[in-house]
Amino acid sequence: MFGGKGKAPPVTSGEAIQKLRETEDMLLKKQDFLEKKIEQEVATARKNAKTNKRAALQALKRKKRYDSQLQQIDGTMSTIEMQREALEGANTNTAVLTTMNDAAKALKSANKGMDVDNVQEMMDDIAEQQDVAKEIADAIANPVAFGQDFDEDELEAELDALGDELELEEQEALDDQMLNIGPLPSVPAAQVPTVVQPAKKKVEEDDDMAELAAWAS
Image (cartoon, rainbow, N blue to C red; front, side, top):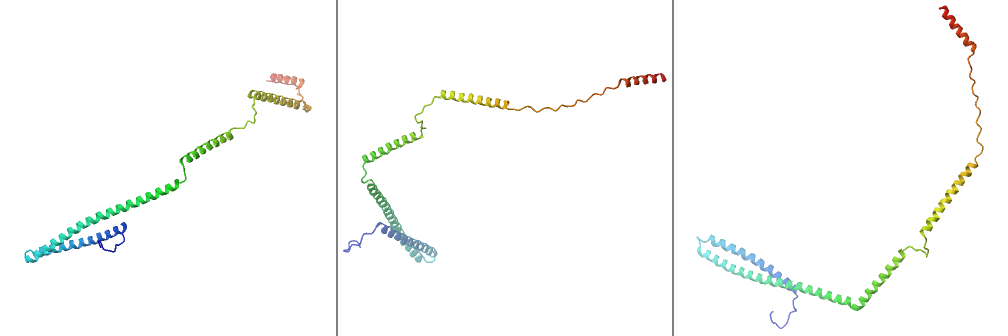
């Protein structure tokens, strides 16, 4: 096993970690067994302490051997645990280094054929084309004048003249309407009722009758 002629293939870190865990499980079971045996021997020593001293002493001796074996297992467990943790740490470091190495290779492959000067020149071209595109967009956004420049004062004067002409045309149209109106319809003559005047004679008769009535009374 340790130096034979036929060399076994090297064990991987993963296989070694698995074997150490299996050994730990086996030692834990051994610990449980020894602890139970120690409890039994203590119970036997107490039981025979007064009645059978020899049996009690034999029980204590066996307990001492179990205690010694238990201490050895504790030491072995500590050593195995440290080995397992070291292997797990090495395994983690190996995985990390492998990943970093693969990433470095991938980055190198991605940068292959790329030159810093070429990249900078390309970025300058992109910036220049962006400036050109912005100038074109600004030119399109500006209103097109077609080379004509109008005087605002002249336009105001022309607008006032048009307003005056419109008012004159409206007045002339109103005058034409007034002149074209036909003769007014004739008003029918109303017959004035004749006021009937009371006859003077009748008034005189009434006065006479009043005077006669006064004398009769």
